[in-house]
Amino acid sequence: MEFALSYDSLTGRDRLPNLPKSDNLTAMSTVTATEASRSFAAILDDAERGHVVVVTRGGRRIATIGPAKAGNGAEVLALLNADATDDGFAADVLAARDVAVLDGPAWPAG
Image 1 (tube, rainbow, N blue to C red):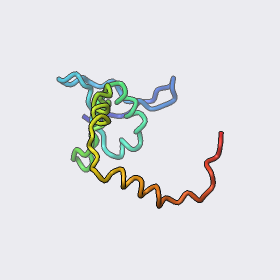
Image 2 (tube, one colour):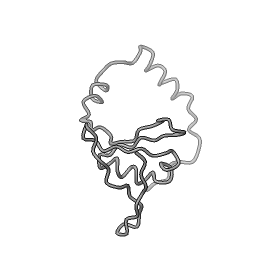
Image 3 (spheres, rainbow, N blue to C red):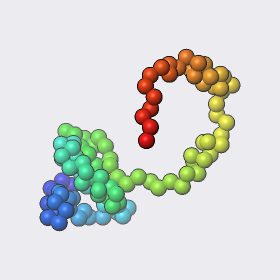
Image 4 (tube, rainbow, N blue to C red):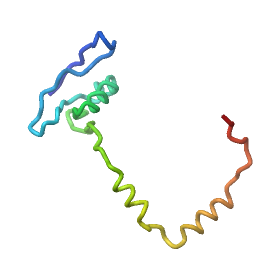
């Protein structure tokens, strides 16, 4: 479904129209790549509100922009707790530190 942006006089920004709900209760719309580039901030605002936007180029679907899935950190914690480094990892880190050039201006304080 193609749509046009409307102007929100309260915020002074373009906004996407209220979009119909799909059968999976996710609002979806389709925009061309040109429309997406011109209204990217509005598309991100809609994604934050749960809308999904399909971006097309030349009539072909090339991307989907939608809300990010919430995570609870369990996968990150599992990755951090996994011992997935090879036996030479520590030696590689130490070797990299030995050849690092640290001659240069100090990071500005404050």
